[in-house]
Length: 172
Image (cartoon, rainbow, N blue to C red):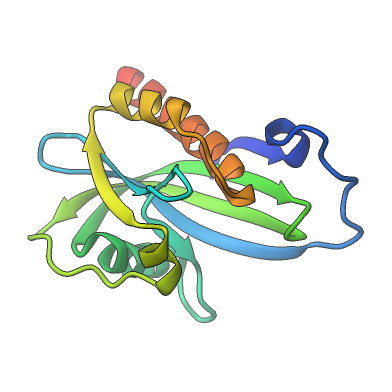
């Protein structure tokens, strides 16, 4: 997969700390998810005010695609069809001492949307799925004001991913 970008703490947080001596690796599968109107769907965590693509951690024994489909089903309440690879974004999170490797795919909703199965944290963050045209979503992300450490990384990551998707959509 193509490297879309790398995000360091200094890129998103003023007065960031020194690099950690060791990191844990966290692998994530996520998707630029499109509905029947070709709108992009992201989860909006309204309380800490950040956007995040449907997706999440890859569990032991799971393939990247299996993790993606499971996470979309949990967070959106629908199945998806993976239509392509977009790329990888790496986030170096000093506070969490994580290197977060996000494998991003392009996917379409398939079937009807049913009940979501959110985590306690997603419920507390008041996560809702928002569907917007790509430029509207980029603007919504730009205007968001994350209140949590991770939100600053996600704001940059999701913007990088949507800009890459926009290039592919324009030229592909």
